[in-house]
Length: 232
Image (cartoon, rainbow, N blue to C red; front, side, top):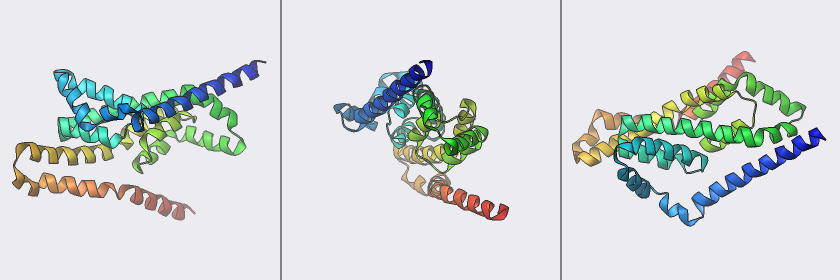
């Protein structure tokens, strides 16, 4: 009887998780509310809160992660509003809060149901993730696995929370800095009106880093294959 009740609770929580994700996707992609989730509208909101703008932005980013708002939109907006360096700090902080919250939502609502479906083969995979949680999360972040699905998905596994947080914190740092540095640097030139700076070292470096970021996943996969050949 107790096992049946536990299974029922797991199913109910999983249904709630699915409904939450479906509602978030509908809200952002199909509902009238999407008209307010633009860079212009969010920028006006930040302007209206004055000195509290960084705190508001971090909150908005964290909520946006859980609601499946495209991270590129929020990241670009952070860089455009706060510049390349403060933008990086606020974007990274908001992304970390959002990643942690989404993970906990997935863990609380979906882990029990996921565990009930795990057979012998999947159990070995689940155990391996628990043992190598940090390395697994770090690798998936560096190869740009979709950010929000990974947040919720990792909550369904046995990966330890702090392994997940550490892997995420380090794994998103490079990509976040490159993107915010690129957008923020272009923004500085645009705002200053000094178009000759388009040929400055900062612009050239930001473009080079931005282009290089697209090759990071391929380089990591090549390194992984090479390592597998050597150990084999």
